[in-house]
Image (cartoon, rainbow, N blue to C red):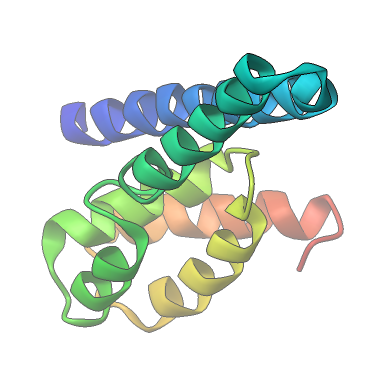
Length: 130
């Protein structure tokens, strides 16, 4: 359970960071035509986002996480379960959620993991998502 809490905290912090970087892109974009320095600030903000996004979006990277989840890796199952429990909101996070849920449905879960996943699915159903 401690590991699950750790993953949820990491996911929430990473979502905050992604949103900050995205906001920086928007702020610098609005001023990029003001001169060379403004253009370079925007360019740096875009480069930072591209460089850091994959590692922040999902622990170990999203594509790697999907492969590890499909392979039944215990840690990947915990990370994916934490992600759907937290349901972070950032660029492409809803797409990621939609990719993780069916894979978790097919994964072999412990009884505790199955309880947690059922609770998430029930919450989503009540909210009109399922």
